[in-house]
Image 1: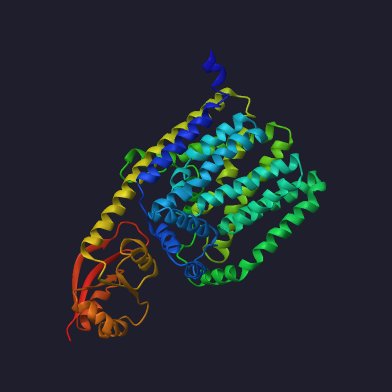
Image 2: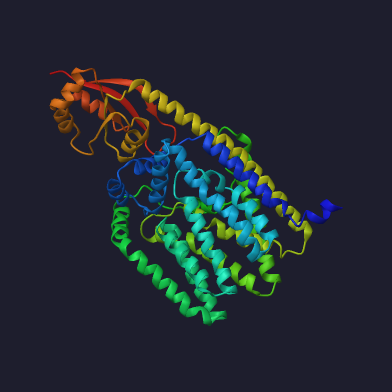
Length: 496
C-alpha cells in the first residue's frame, strides 16, 4: 500500500539521480580517456596565460571555460598535484554537483520537491548528460548557467527584486562567455521572457530591458574576437553541410541512449527507444498544455520549451542558408530547460497509467544509457592508454616530431608527446625540412642520438620525402580509429 501510494510521488528519484551522478563521477575520474577537443583544452591550460588567450582567439569558442579550468589547474599545482586531464574531469563535474544542490534547495522550493526529484534524476541520467558531464570541455558550465537563468525567470516572476535580476543577468553573461550556443540559448530566454512580459506582466519590462542592455554592454569587449572567429568559420570550418538525415538525427540525439559499437544490444535498442521516448514525451507535453488552463507555471513551461526549440532552429537555419555551424551536441546547454519543463508538466498528467509508462520508459533509457556510458569510458580509457604507451615506446623526450596539421600538433605536443621537440610546417614541407636538418642545434641533437619523426596525415607525403632523398621508415604507429585526424608516423633521416 505504501509503495502504491508513493510510486507516483517519485521523491525517491532525487536520490536515484544522485546515484547516477556518483556512477558518472567514479567512471569519469578512474577512466580518463581523451579525444581531440579535450586535448585542445588540456593544451590551452598548459600554456602561459597570454599564449592561452592568443590560441583561444584562433579557435571557435569564447574563453571563460579555459580561465576556469586554468584557475583550478593552478590551485592544484600549488597543492602539488599536476594531473591536468583528471583536474579537467573534476572541473567538468563541478557544475553537475552545483545543479544537484540547486535542485535540493532552490528548484524544490520554486517548483515542488516532486518536480525537483524527477528533474534531478533526468539531469544526471538522460542521454548526453553522463558522457558530457565528464568531458574536458565547457558544456557542463554552459548547462549550469542556462539552467540557472531559466530557474531565475520563475523567481523573478514570483519576486522581482534586485538579487533575482542580478543572478539572472550574471547567468546570461556567463553563458555568452562560455559557448556561442549557450549565448543563443540565453538570447532565446530573453526573447521568450520578453513576450511573456509584454503579454502578462508589463511591470517587469523596464528591468528586463535593463538586464538585456547590461548583458550586451558587458559582452562588447569580446565582439572583435567574435567577429574574427566568425570570419574564420566562414572561410574554413570542419562541420559538414546539414542534410535531412542529420537534422532528424539531431532530434533523436536528445533521446538516444549512449551506445557503443561493442554493445550490440545498445545499437539495436538505441534508435527505437529514442523514437518511442520522443513520441511519448512530446505527446505528453501536448496533452498537458491542451488540457490545462494557462496558469503561471504553464507560461513558464512555454518560455522554456519555445526557447529550447529556437536554439536548433536558429543553428540549423544559419547552417542551411550560410555556413554549417550547428552540431547536434550544441543543444546540450539547454537540456536543463527541456528536462525541467518536462518535470513540471509530468505532474500535471492525471492518468497514472500514462505516468507509469513514461517513468518505465525513462528508467529503461537511463539504464541503457548508463551501461553504454560505462563501457564507452572503459574503452576510451583503454584506447588513450594504449595510444600513449605506443607513442612513448618509440618516440622519446629527446626526439624531434614534425607535424603539418594543427589538430595533430596539439594532440601530440599538448599531451601524448609533450616532452619531445615539436615543429609544425603547414607549407613548404621540403624547404622547411632541409632547413631543419641543416640547423646547428638540430644537428647537435641528431649527433647525440635524437631521431626525427614525421607525422603523415594520409597525404602520401612520405612518398614525397623519399623522392627528395629522405630516408623514410614506417614506425608502425597508425591512428585510424575515429579521431578527428588519422595519421601514420615515419622515422626520417637524410644523408649529407
